[in-house]
Figure 1 (cartoon, rainbow, N blue to C red):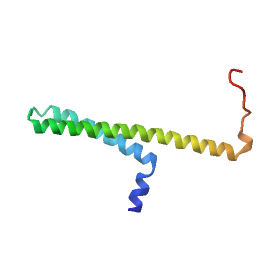
Figure 2 (cartoon, rainbow, N blue to C red):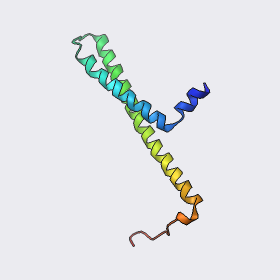
Figure 3 (cartoon, rainbow, N blue to C red):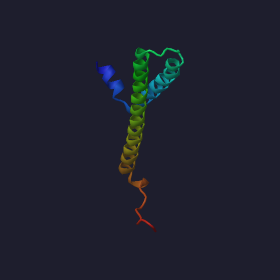
Figure 4 (tube, rainbow, N blue to C red):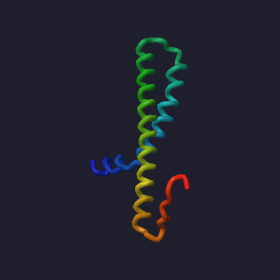
Length: 94
């Protein structure tokens, strides 16, 4: 369980995973629609596919934000640890 947990704990992996799953579920939507079957079971299946698509898309978006936040934190830590790279603070509007 440790390898699985460490893999899914990385925002970069989650971004890629949810991005690919969004594309996979998105490809299944037209397949489900164009089968020509109008039964209620197919409708439920379509809604399940849609729910999976939307869920993975939103998770992918959240993982993208998390990656950006991690990059900003790393950049701030790098800047804080290297006092020669600091730029003087200036007042806004000047």
